[in-house]
Image (cartoon, rainbow, N blue to C red; front, side, top):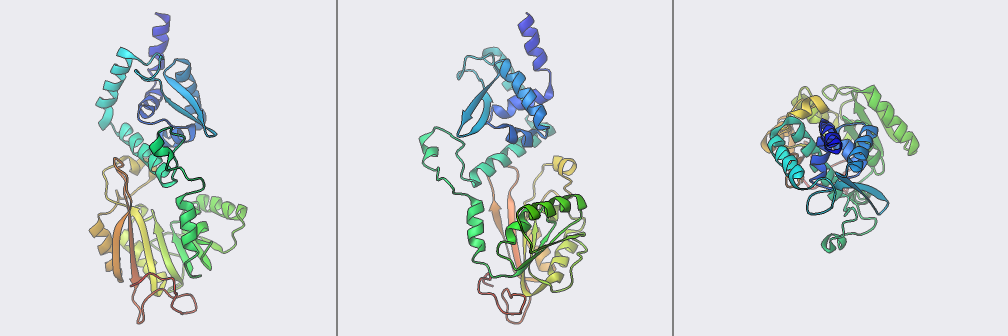
Length: 334
């Protein structure tokens, strides 16, 4: 009776139930669980320790990582068998529509998407997965390689956040102007640039609807996952066009329209993404030509898909031009 009482007290904590639910879906490490649940890493580690001691969770070390998975019925001889697991499974199914559960599930799908885009198999022993493992292969490496094909143009990263994209662009751009409304994240971005010895990024504080950048200053204006935070998306795109030289490009990466309301409070999103046609109309309405919109990333079961949209600021000759007015050979075809 004492053991049963201790077990049910352990299961009386919402965070531990959320942990069990996501571990029933996928084995995960502490960093991934921290991102999914939105809890402090110390708290996640403490909960995992308690669940492990109770025999509900197993720890596995694989390829230098530590993963946790459910000690589920039919797989292990832990406590989580039979009637107990049947009860929990039924409760998890009933809670599928809960806003907290939906948020956890969305973030789990994002973790799985990142794994896939990094070409990681996470040590899975399935031979079909093992054949996909190629050491050193990643989307980051591919993007950097493709960046070397770009001409040395001037780039604006609008809504730059902590500056990761700005610093990536600095590898091939002649200069990057990075703008964000938050001085806190700009401080972190400047520190990251200092650590990586990046000197061709100018960091500016400002709103994307009122940019602190002169007219026709950059060849490429980027809005990466920033537009859904804008108070006025149309004005933000108009500002991106204003600062772009004739023949330059505006590139938008943003979420496709979705129904995950939790992102408003958790992430500060003002918009729940954009329909394909709506995003195309916003770019065309700002005066861009040859507007294209397509899906940049999507995963089955993930409520979030990424749209990629681009347009060209009108010019007599067309195409991307570098800061000296010459047409850049690496520009996208009109």
